[in-house]
Amino acid sequence: ASGSEENDVVVIGGGPGGYVAAIKAAQLGLKTTCIEKRGALGGTCLNVGCIPSKALLHSSHMYHEAKTTFAKHGVKFDTVEVDLPAMMGQKDKAVSNLTKGIEGLFKKNKVTYIKGSGKFLSPSEISVDTIDGSTTTVTGKNIIIATGSDVKPLPGITIDEKRIVSSTGALALTEIPKRLIVIGAGYIGLEMGSVWGRLGSEVTVVEFAPDIVPSMDGEVRKQFQRILEKQKMKFMLKTKVVAVDTSSDIVKLTVEPSSGGPQTVLEADVVLVSAGRTPFTSGLGLETLGIETDKIGRIPVDNRFGTSVKGVFAIGDVIPGPMLAHKAEEDGIACVEFIAGKEGHVDYDKVPGVCYTHPEVASVGKTEEQVKESGVAYRVGKFPMLANSRAKSIDDADGLVKIIAEKETDKVLGVHIMCSNAGELIHEAALALSYDASSEDIARTCHAHPTLSEAVKEAAMATYDKAIHI
Ligand code: FAD
Image (tube, rainbow, N blue to C red; front, top):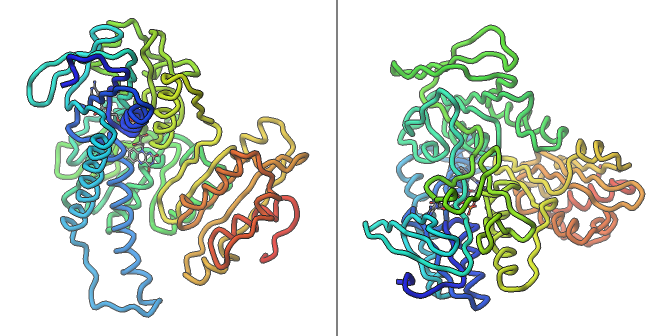
């Protein structure tokens, strides 16, 4: 449709980076086309990532609560059962409603949507193999690559999405595995491990590194691991997988210490490979343009998202930076603002990260280890959720708030929150960091009572002075 007329902007990829960039470009008055090969908008995040995983985390949490805590609150059932097809149906409905919602936003904002796979013919021409089998050429003054990322394979392990699954398969299992082994203790592995653990699987997490989630503040991480262990998740750290045998009904996984040593064989019904994600550029024809990727497959960009070829930009998981949906969206908006001749801005030091387990773990800014390494003198303020009245009133008081501030100026450098809803609470901290606030600024902001957010205020008080309730 748009093939005949030149676009101001053509976006390849309709994930959170690409679709947000396309909408923003259209809002800025630019003629825009978005090409997506999946047949549905929203990318990894909406179709096989953030959204379906949060749907299952919520449903499995409800089941687990019904089984383990409702009676304590005076709510009794005769039996509580999992209806897995219904649970999956609810997840699928959430996904399809949201993808249709983005199609609606494209129409509203007059973004042309082409379902197909795009490939560079030149810096301004994209050939598209559409999903209905035709080929068309789309031209644009500016092209944005937003092709995202894919599961990082592990050498020697073939993903069949049935017994050896990636996160995509783990979001669509048709039976609850008796034993689930998760390879990789990052956000995705711990979230999916939580889902299936709550539904009844025995979960063992195998991790090469000495710690779970290496990006997390060390003190918070230790407490987090203890909480997950209390939830019966088992961890084998400093352990590497050396072989997988799928020849019988049971999957056999041979592991050994990361630094070498005696081997052990673990048995599982399902193995989840969640050892990271890798930028996705295959079939894009980058070689035609002479754009080279770095050692780990990312497209290098300048501070205006420009690649080495004029008029070709890249955003989201395919470029360096945290592989997160909200970061991809920020990239998309800033990139389009630059294209439109405005100023764009993304502060990569202030991108929040959230692990949506229970409790959730959220952080923004630096960890204590990073601050220590930077050599800046600092203070730490902490407040345990056990001393927060709202957390106590709902009997959900695992976790803490930890704030790190520069000693001399009291400027907040990092905030780490572990509690239910930490992913919502973190944004007051993100705003504080954006405005270079001090811990005293947070502490002197009146927080409503009784809320979990009061723990943030109290941790802030404890940073430059003393908390009240502990
Ligand atoms: P993607 O979302 O990967 O989108 C890229 C799109 O481009 C894809 O739809 C692909 O089909 C399309 N494409 C690729 N090549 C072509 C081509 N040649 N032509 C046309 N189309 C093409 N992030 C969070 O922030 N919060 C979370 O809770 C979270 N949970 C996650 C859970 C899981 C299980 C997974 C796997 C990821 C999760 N993420 C989460 C990460 C998040 O999904 C990604 O960071 C985000 O989707 C990146 O957005 P993107 O637009 O760069 O790429």
